[in-house]
Image (spheres, rainbow, N blue to C red):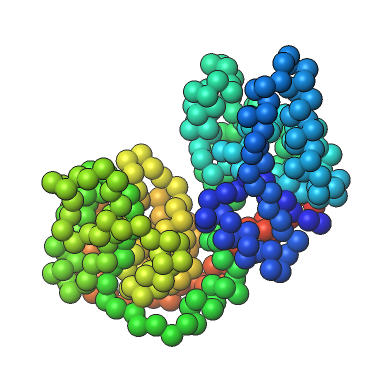
Length: 323
């Protein structure tokens, strides 16, 4: 059984698929609609336009056979959704965004009517629909899939086994938001008082110099650099956006790489790997609790569950529900 991932194009996704392809029948097809619009708009009449789209997609997907599986990304599938519907292979859809966000985006682009729902539009087309959001899974009867790292289990072990110095430091990387600035300014004195260095990267494209924290670097990191810095730190900081909940990639990274997480996300306590000496929810006012967390010796984490959050674990979850 071969798995074709269609239009998974960000660096994180391509890294994951390249890793899986070394040991599995995993393939990528990207830039599916490249040059389509420039030609299609020159054709007269709906019939020729639809025929052109059918021919264009059939050529792009010519390698996919009946016994294969296609894996579509909920955000990028809409431009060729009508063709996917005609394909005789097995079809999986993974929603990385909430159903509410996906519905809003498609309505804004005119791809859904004001009363049309994202899930009910795609449900008849796919054999299985996965979501990272537990609440969406309950509301829309979707299959829950765990967050996963873009590394195979073998690669994760190699990262962990690589000799490197681990400092008593806290690593953070994120985009500029005033809520994050305020959180960083609140937590920094507590970290410094407990002899914990800060290694913070706050990416700001808009030059908010007046509010920019002095202990942050306005520097973009690749995902590889991100993981290397995380590996050299004792603590990892996560600052979620207001109203953001659920399991994040940062929490998974902390668990899999055996790091201690400081977060404003109370939902981390709901997950199977939660251990109080490894995860601290800092709300901005519980400074004594954070200080004690920084000083205590952590208990061992249940490493047997970590495999499920690797790229191998993700692929196994897909196979389980499609075979």
